[in-house]
Image (cartoon, rainbow, N blue to C red; front, side, top):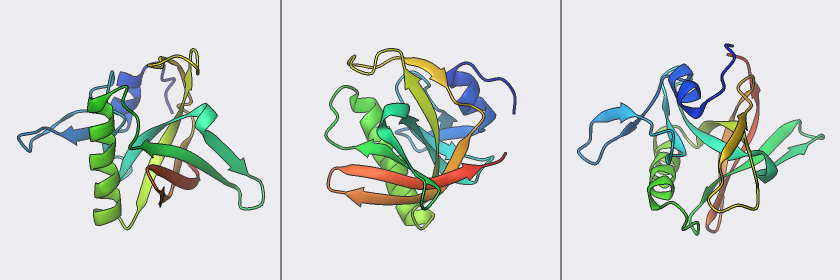
Length: 142
């Protein structure tokens, strides 16, 4: 994988797109959208904050929070996220992918990306738990 240092580069590497209000494909807005469809993976893909991921040694999976319907800091991001979560459940039997991002300051609102773990992409299955959605996945080589 190339050395990726920005969200724009990561979405481009994944060959990801989202759908405009008019129903047309367009590039993922790296500043305030948290999901899209990756042509490279053939799956919806999401961002996951590093502090909202948990590794399970027994199952060798990582559980990441990829959806929070209660989040009000970015109406655009939440709507985009819910759109792609629903697409994953409807069109991909709940299969999706995520990549991990680190916040400059995890307590800040809104958060800003400090680092992208571009060497690892995770693929697995989504789970809904009330207003939260998690993706339980394993690393995938590109």
